[in-house]
Image 1 (cartoon, helix red, strand yellow):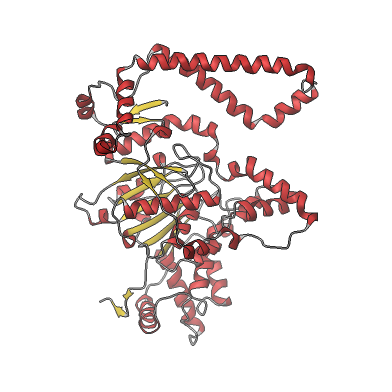
Image 2 (cartoon, helix red, strand yellow):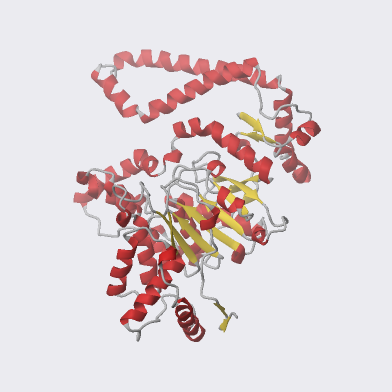
Length: 522
């Protein structure tokens, strides 16, 4: 149970009898912790370099029976060092007034009668999240929703052939060793080790400056998800009544991630970390990540008290996958904002691996890590906004904007929702527009009212479900007008690289046809 830091202000420290913000371990605790941290780092390095280590030992002839006793002595020595270090650290902690108070706060949570008091006491501290009590347990989804988002529906269901068995084995081994860590670098423990101080500082800032409340949410597959909630419902700003759930990228954490943009606009915000990231347990495989975002939305509705219609799902980069999964499960959300998001991770993975391994990469992605936004975006009929980074070095080939995978995602969206408007000519026209940075000021808005009127009239008569069969009798130039109008309503460009924080000016409530229950808004 590694104690990290205190995260509340001076008033609370005075109340709790503490005179420091950052926890300072005593000499014995620091000595024991340094040894254990060094051994932990060596173990992580050894884990990721194990193929090289085994190869080296084999070539030197150490992997034979004669050396078993030597290995046994070596591992026993390491074990003794670990035990002694744990004892030294444990004794040092018993001498720490601050640490003892933290343990008492944790112990309070074992008594249901004092739950509120216990929560208040434990939130005065920041420590190893594995020891944090569970704040919310998610329920299972209905069978109908399970079928909607079933992993089997997105897998390649080709008939099994024994000739493909070696490739299937290689794909399984690859994705469950280095593959998942290439897709989600934030899952790598060494990276988390070096990010640790930044995460503590970022979390402390969210608590101190924004009154953030940290909670542990348990998923249906027993993972424990680290979340933080900033409640702005009583700050006098209308945005505070809307909750933005932020889904981070593949190497990002809520402590230093995309929450800053909606917070700057005074929205209520709920951040969470992917399974296996920082305080969250598990691993970021698709099934576990789906259960995680589902549990987070359930927590927002059932514990925090937000209506589904007051929730915006915001995803950056690979976090867009999580946001779209959640939109499929909760189709009545207020909207989805996807920033620097791709269409299908398969194409990104294949472009970064040798061509000779293309088939194995396809098997690995489709069978075990099928992050396919093309399927998810067609299962969501609500308001959606896509933001593209014009200088995106991750989603583009050689920095060419016409190869940005976000282009394919917006084309998929528009073609699916408005198939009779986005015919071959219009798709080619939009592709040409997407091949260069888009400045909304360069577009004529003279026909915008007419385009909006067409959509409202159709939706009033026929309903607003997608795909919408509007445009069957339109002339070619009318389709062109509608296509450009719809692109501008669903898509924005931001001149930046992949990881630049999104300015608040680009964070807009996604556009929707202004009609409800058959009546046009006036």
